[in-house]
Image 1 (cartoon, rainbow, N blue to C red):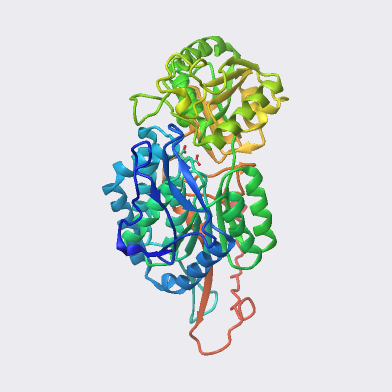
Image 2: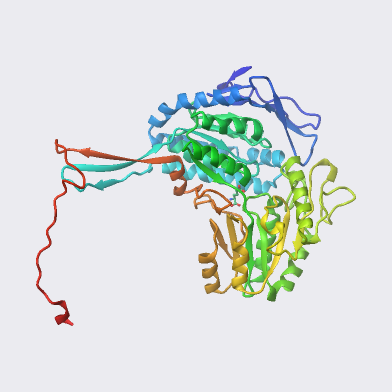
Length: 542
Ligand code: UN1
């Protein structure tokens, strides 16, 4: 079945048994709405109400991914030749359309992945900010003029697009993260095949529709839905076939390493934003109430499902008891529930049942590591629920907040990322010990310190190995125009966002223009400069 994109809202489908709309979703390949080549589908489910199905989407096959790649290759020359300010104008239109539809997109994000409305609004705003930033970047995309060492010769640098980019993102920031990737990619003149996250296909579909509505030519962004191990893997396999010029991936370190290997052996550029075990240090001079707020939000906001969420909370022993008393009081009062129904919840359900399952095994891993479980009892049910749980537990996939104490460097749970509402807590004897612990995990994405000692803050900032550091702030909440990314196991050194991301989606082209009409050899035909003889004894002047 093929529909023409411009015909409007034909995908809006029936009411599901829950009284909510359930749509027939499609891939978007060369601007056309298409189903999977073999008719396969999967569904998107609201994790707060498991019998609320948002829609059915193509389970894309290798043929679908290849059709999307064909479309992206066909669109590339025209798009690369479109003036960058025009590309920026279309990106600006996307931002303005997102502003117009923000409330609906936010509610959809909450329904599809269970984020609170406030957080979903933050994620959509981050996508808008990215569009507005890169609208103007289309009017810059600067190269340089460089002086030649030879007369009558000019040197220039230009940014050139890489070609066709494969985009694979996780579902936890389903608006912000794909925009972090695709907006700079298309601003630089690339075209994209976007594999949507399996748990957020409807939001991705809506965003791709909005991108086309903004004036994006067909084939510049091609959306395919499906599984990571299906469509995602087909996209990565296409690197080996020479059909992809760039992969940008946000997800697990394990999958990131596999993608890095495939790209590496083909000399194809890849951007990898991977896991984290983000440390937050609390020193005695800190404002403890502020530190408690930051640690609590970092650990449990978004149900701990950000790559920047707090992992290891490292507390100086002198303030440990005071800090913990305040921290535990907050944890115990956590409001949890469906944010579409209840106001003021800190977090809602897990992103999906798969994330819930993985989280529960990570909780078992923490227990098996030998850490003390100070709070938390796994999955919330009607007869196993925290004091301020507001929804009907069995309707969705909700988790208790978990606090593990007495964590030490030799434990597995000190090193492993736990994607969900859990924090692992260590005691530090002094600043050097705290910094050592902060650097001791295999990751290096985000990090934070609470201190009012400026020298300590400076030493943390210079001693930590991480891509991002908050001083008197939590580990989360990077702004859309600063470089985002990590070191060590958190990535391969590429960055998203701001002007820095442009490096990831363009290459430098050096051009020399010989105007002299003859062959002048660099290095060899350069005129020597003789130094004048000077017979001054400078020591006589002192
Ligand atoms: C992610 O979890 O992949 O810094 C992105 C933050 C958000 C982005 C998180 N602005 O927490």
